[in-house]
Length: 130
Ligand SMILES: [Zn+2]
Image (cartoon, rainbow, N blue to C red; front, side, top):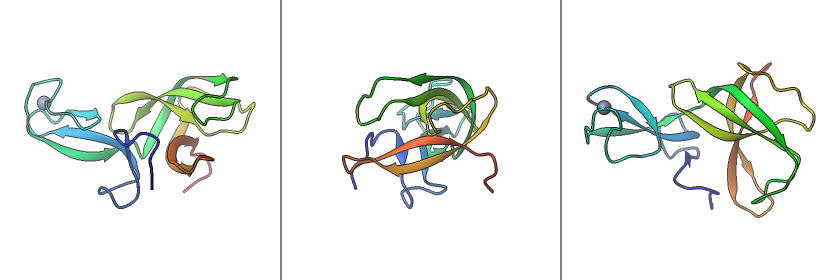
């Protein structure tokens, strides 16, 4: 399996709670940050646990994109998301073209197979999903 961005996310079985985004949890100040970092950006501590985060997230600002890029067929959505653990990032949003996305909308992490054979991820509206 080839991931679109191996530094960014876990697939099933790679970490407890996967699939989801890669994160680090500081053993000293308990801060959780995106990605696997060598030192805590808040306190500088170098003892961090690798954690899987962002299984669920909340949508911030988003916009519909009308140009295809890097395997994403336009139109698609890109949005600012806030993970349930706190860190924020931008992520593709898996919603049908023309969908009205709203700030505060609950999202869930989803893996999907890209046409080029790689595995990518997006956040999908979580409404109506247990
Ligand atoms: Zn820290």
